[in-house]
Image (cartoon, rainbow, N blue to C red; front, side, top):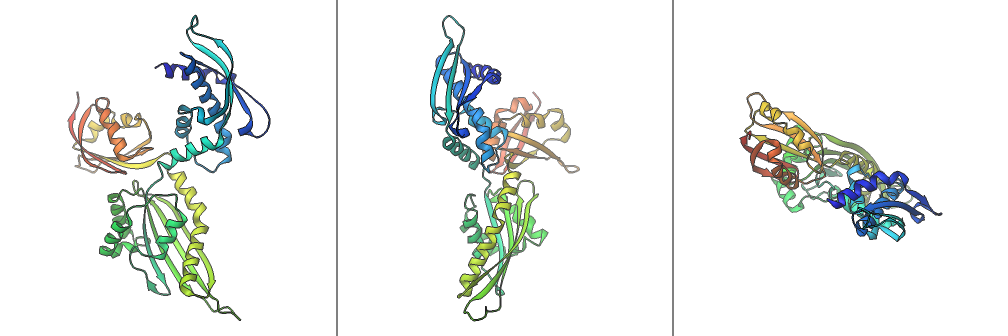
Length: 377
């Protein structure tokens, strides 16, 4: 409680903070006035205020998609590692006899430390991907799950986690129709089901075609032309995040190596666009599909369950998808910087607020399915 009080008071005083020094933003001293119940709390509040002021320029200079919650996380966990050359300039009030400590302090924001902490925080919520590529190189189809495109995509987008590839190959070998998911809606729906079962947040469906060009005059080089078409689909909502089509040509002495390099070059060309689309789509967190079984829509509304979900820590957006006629299932999409299990844990703690009780039916990274066992007090 004391820490909370010190932060609130520090926040109220931030308008009086003064920056000074010369050089680049990260080199400049930032001077603040901060308070706390104890001297250490006042020092902690000062470091948080310094980080809060310096964070803006760090984010602006980076390509990271940083929302308010990520900013709050970095500021609230600010420590000496985030601030260099920290020193208390004056003690304005001191306990006793005053009810609190008030200090004037200064320090420099450590851009390396803050940027690293931001990346660690944001990467925790990098969506897990599942790849389904149909590939044809000179009219020869690749084995399911063993396409050159699979390897090229993972190498090009190495910052993302992926589902277990051995498990996916087994499924693709058994359900080869999934390879047509890029162009076939029925196959896409089934691929989304598999992606949910494997705890993927993004389904990547693609089609790659490589053809041989005419040998370059006065050389032994043969150009290999690759066309790569990719769709990224949010597994939780089923919405298309991005669709891209790119071509690349790579002359080479060896057709197989030329094909691989042409595919990789095409992937490289779509990299910045796809990453920007994914970061924009997941800037407010993962989409978790929550299903409440054994509750009517009226009871769901009367107990203000949507509002209770919205107030859970880490939850940014709640969308109620409603119910089918005669059904007692309510489907909800929750955007949160949480995994499904973390969301379920917070839902359990908020049962009294929701005025219901429930038991888990299925809890995965992107899915929470519960059966309501009690409605009302």
